[in-house]
Amino acid sequence: MKRVILGSVVTALCAAAGSAMADGYDDTGAVYISPMADYTFLDKNRLSKNAAGYQVGLGYNFAPNFAAELDLSPNSFKIPGSGASEKLNALSIDVLYKFLPVTSVVRPYALLGGGRMTDQVGGHGPNNDQWLVEAGGGALIGLGDQTGSTRVQLRTEAKYRKEFISDAAFIPRDPGDVVVSLGLNFMFGAPTPPIAKAAPPVEEPPPPPPPPPPPPPPPPAPLDSDGDGVPDSIDQCPNTPKGDRVDALGCTIKDEIKLERVHFATDSAELLPDSIATLDYGVATLKRYPQMVIEVRGHTDSTGSKQHNQVLSQHRAESVMRYLKEQGASNPMTAKGYGQELPIATNATKDGRQANRRVSLHIVGGP
Image (cartoon, rainbow, N blue to C red):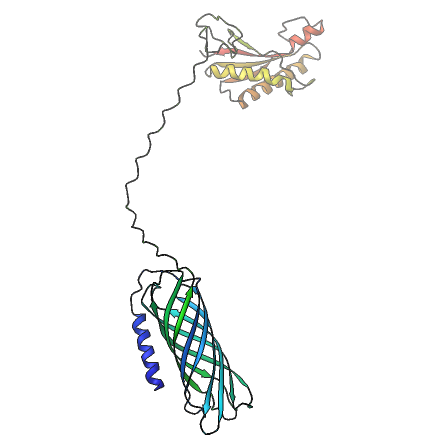
């Protein structure tokens, strides 16, 4: 008989598992209580006989189609001819898997679980507290609307329960029982409405890229009133005659680019920092005329010997030429020291000697 019952349950569950899952409501988060009447087909080796009883299940739907259930089954079975009974009090935790959506009229499910069972033969026998496992299945049959926050189903179930016990008086070793149940299932908790499937997006061609922004207008040309190529803002010689060759400050140059205030350390060719501005002016002027051929001339006053002053002026001319090239002046250049031979003022005074200590850029070729 037990084989017939379990075979029918397995067949029903296999058919349900093969059914297509339809879109429906999700009962995750809902709780339920299931009071059920049951009938137990006891192991044939037990002294007690089959009988009706009851069980109560408390459950929680913890995931779509999954529930965890605490099941209590306190039943008593008479032992024929003795006037005594065998009490089987089972407490188990089962996991249920429901095969179809909430709104299906019939929802088959499978269960698997385990727990503890107290098995007592006779009113004064020992309480044999042992482990049990159980497996089976059933079905929930909807009664009325199954989309509200409170739902009622008819519940029918069959499961095989095995008790692990040995060396207990009047109890067979590891007996197995089949329990079939019928009752109601009260579900509490609003199901989630079905989520409509979004239509696949229609691929549209990407919009054309925006046209590039118009280029910014060119900056206005700096004002150059006399047309010498030097903006009025820095032109120190306005109204230069047309066609004159001018330096970086807009002043006419003829055969020499004067370098005012080029100073060196005493008796040395080391340039002092206050010479940089003057030398940079010379670089800017040479860059205006890159084909101009230059001789960098060094001069001293009459202090010291002629031989010493000749060498010193040569070194100072070379120092200036080196700086001009390092700053980007590409003109053909040579350096030559003239010592004290070409004074431009008297060496008898301090101011005259200072004027004679100088470096100049002489134009010796080019346009």
